[in-house]
Length: 241
Image (cartoon, rainbow, N blue to C red; front, side):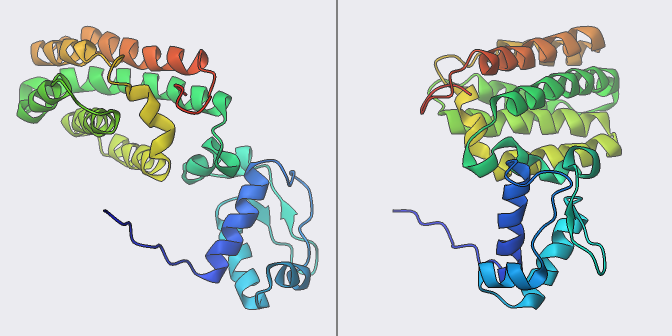
């Protein structure tokens, strides 16, 4: 039997996570004032220094504004927060938000298409051995949804590597953090009975030939297929998201 290590959190991190989830889930609205440090310390049964540290963390995330001598106010995180909030925004209170998931998959389709296009343009100067191996691995029979998910992300990461675009690399790091924070949200997209790697093969063929338009079209079609699955899902346990 495999066991996962218990993640130790500082008290302030736990407090910050609790308030963050309340804000992201809409329990606390923009312009609402948070209770005072003293009240928060009493509610969480922690000392005020832990509350103060938690509030500074929330402010760094763009979720609140600390006004010295006045109430601490919740900000509109859609305007002020960064992509590091995505893992928590996707599933407030642990339940996936269908609209946000569709929004994310829509952005994913654009990024995948653009990345494949740039990879094809760079292909004459790049070694495609790993991309070829990943494509073959995706086509192997008997893979689980979790295995397909990992291989698919590795395929995307290799496309990113082929572009040699450092800004795209940083963006890919953010996407990876979203996936790693909530992998179970995306696993149903990789149902082995429905997953089809033919578009990955088509993209590889186009990239090898330096056909940027065909590479982009293959990856966009693949990503839009996942988007369509998300749009039609009922989000019941075991269903596709």
